[in-house]
Length: 143
Image (cartoon, rainbow, N blue to C red):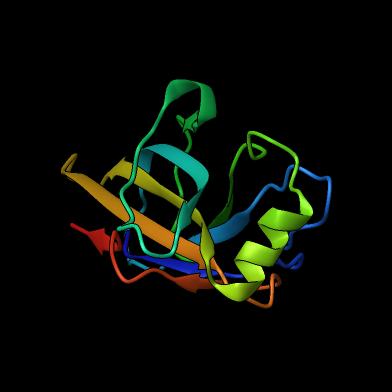
């Protein structure tokens, strides 16, 4: 299941005092079904000077296990849990200036029709316009 990540009908955004939930749609762009799908998603803020790393702390990670099959051409919504704290004016100024980056990342694990195991890792970052997600420079891989 080569995945395609596309923006949904509702853009990612942040607002003062809210705990944002970020999300995208993942689509099965392959020619065969993806079975026994499991997904993990997370969101975190880091200083732009720090190197991104993915971590999945249980209390902050959204885990979905499924017995359904994602058929070719189908898509599914992947969302994060809300951020840990409501956003302050300092957070929003940091995201707008590029001093801080808000990351939305995760992985998808599934089996193909021959029961071979596959995984896709993805990372997106909130753009300075606070309305769109862009691909990160790392942690975007599939096998």
